[in-house]
Length: 136
Length: 136
Image 1: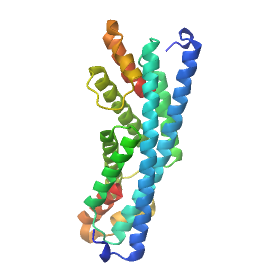
Image 2 (image 1 turned 135 degrees about the vertical axis):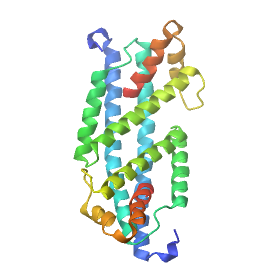
Image 3 (image 1 turned 180 degrees about the vertical axis):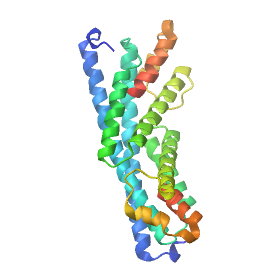
């Protein structure tokens, strides 16, 4: 875009909106960084205490709640649900990478330990740190 | 999960983590509701003032910035980039739905007007309310 061709007030308005978008994006990135810290802790907790990996009732409640929140915020509820699934998929991917021992991310040693020490039930342990941690 | 089988302190810790996850999810949903309001305004602004739809330099700056923010927050930078693309794809989908006149969402009349009144350059107008609004 050639800014000199744009009316000054329009340019100012565009800048104002973009600054808000950038602030929001920064907030979301930091919120999700915190969320991943929580789900990693959930994964560790469940793996350590032999808790079942999946909790369909919890997931159903999360989806229903997010759809309601979205509706009240005038956000497409279907998008909110897709977003949750997108995030869960990412957590699963991270945890699978951890389980494969090929991670390059900022995983804590505690999480690595939880996903690798229980050699006697490899599949269950893997599930415990994927689906569980993801849904939280 | 059968809660009675779980040690009380573990259950309390799981509840604590889940409450944090739920708080974060609510924050993210509300942040994104605000973001979509901004991108819709950007779409309207650009359509009304014949601004070019795509702004690759802006998008490149957004991606680079989000990756940096993610890194400092110990979030996978690749995930931050994927998230931005996921959100942009959703904005595009919304705007295409608006352009098709089949929307059931909470689109403002101003946005609808901006996507439908310029019949002489349909493709350009559609782009102006998709790529633009999405990247913001």
